[in-house]
Picture 1 (tube, rainbow, N blue to C red):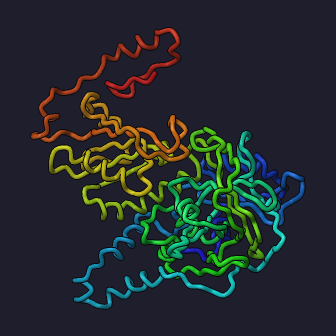
Picture 2: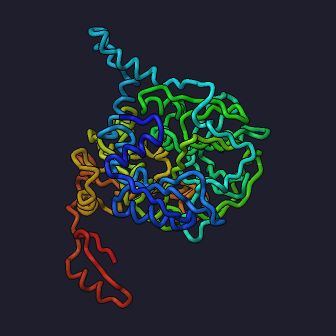
Picture 3: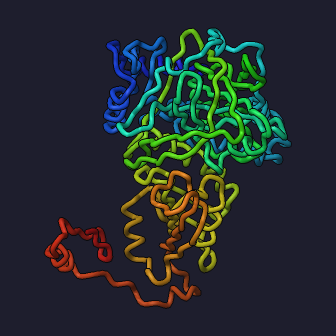
Length: 491
C-alpha cells in the first residue's frame, strides 16, 4: 500500500502498534532528540510529540514526528513494498521492456504503460499544503529540534529543498539540512556536488527556493535517492506511489511543490550571500564543522490544517538515515546491475553509514575483473563519495560480514591487493579528510585469483600464531588485543 499523506502513514503505524503518542510537553531542544535516539537504537516505535515545547517555553501549534523510518520493516511499510528491490525491478522493466512479449500478448503491456503514465506529475490549482497561509512568517514557531549539545542551532533534518534549473526550467528536490538563523532566515547546506548548488551558481539574480516538510513518504524517499539526471524526483515519486504526483504553484513564487506535503516554507536566496552554518552533530558521533553556506530569506509559510512536522536525528549508527540508506541500496541494485553488467551483488553496511564502504561481488571471467567492476562503481552517481570498496567472488554473500572477514583474511595480499587512489572526490562531510571535498580511496581485491592471473601463482597466505594475541596483550599501553581472523589482530 502507498500513502497519499503523511497523516495516513502515521495512522497506519498507530493501528499496528508502531507509534507512541506523547501528550505532555517535550522540549524541541535536546529532549525530543534524546527520545528519538533511544528509540531507534533499540528498534523502537515511531514517536509523535503532540505538544513540542519551543525554546521560549511556548507550545508549537504543529506536532513533531520522529523515528518514522527507524526499522527495516517500517521503511518497507512506508514504501509499500515487501522488498526494496521491487522498486528497482519496476524501473528496469521501464528501461528495457520485453518488446517481444508485448508484441505476442499486447495486453501484458498495459501495466507497463500505466507505470509510465504515473511518472508524469499532475499540476493542481491549489494544494492541501496551502490550506493555511502565513504571510508574515516566523519559522522559529515550527517544532524544529536541536538534537546535540554543540549544534549551532535548530535544524530541519528532513527538508525537501526545491529549486529550479534557471536554464532548463526543470525542478529539483534535494534533502539538505537547514539551520534556523532567525524568524525569516535559514541556512541551506547544499554542498558543491548538489543540484541546488548548481542552480545557485547558474543564477545571476535572486533565486526562488522552497522547503517542504512532510508529505507522502515516497516523496521524502525520492528526495534522497541517487537518480539519473534525466529522471526528476517528482517523476520518481510518481513511480514509487503508483500514481501521478500532485504538484502546485507556490503562493509567492513560481516554484512547483508537492501539493500534499504538510508544510511549505517559501522564499529566495541571493547568489553569493552566505552565513556561518554549523556545527552539526553528524554521522559516527562527529560534529561537522561550521562553514559558510547560502541563506534563504523566507516570504511565506503555508501548511495543511492537520500538518505534522517530521524530523530525524543523525549520529552514531544505527540511526534512521541508515535504514533509509539501506533501502536505497537495495532498491537501486537492479538498476545498477542493468547499467553495470558485471555487478552480481552490492552491499553498503549500516555500520559504516553507507558513505564509507561498499562490498561488491563481481562476475569473474578474466583476471582482475573484480577491480574493473569496483572502479566502474566509483564513478556511478553518489557512489563517488565512497572511501573503500571491496571486490569479492561471485558466490560471496555480500551482506555476510563474517564472510567478508574470511575473504580479507585468506585472499588479500597487502602488497598486491590494496589499491590506493589518491586525491579523489569526497563528501563535504568526510571528517577524516585533510582537505575539503577531497580524499584518497581504497580498493581491496578480495577475490580468488584465476589461474591465468599472476596472483594465482603465489603461495597460500599464512596467518599469525595465536600466541601473538597473548604477546600483544602484554605490551604496555595495550588495553585489549583480539584476533578477528588468523591475519587480523585488533588492538
